[in-house]
Image (cartoon, rainbow, N blue to C red; front, side, top):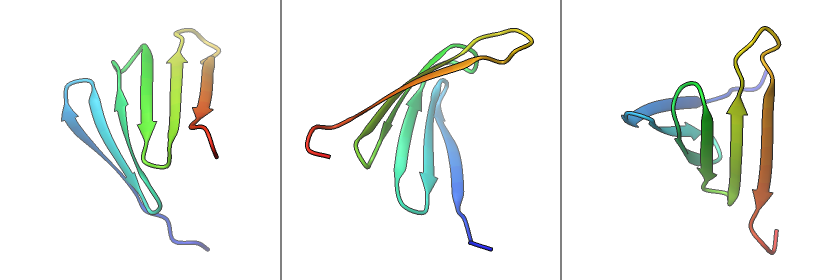
Length: 67
């Protein structure tokens, strides 16, 4: 079984610093609503959690040029 590491810190209200074994990321956004994430490996993600019984989640991911 692989060993995993993941830790999330609340820096300011609405801003989180996420750290795992290979990279780190900063997430900005409210608990319920649109979120923007910028990762140390160059990944930019925009996501939205919608309320309701289905728990719909839409995520678009873009990477930097040259990857």
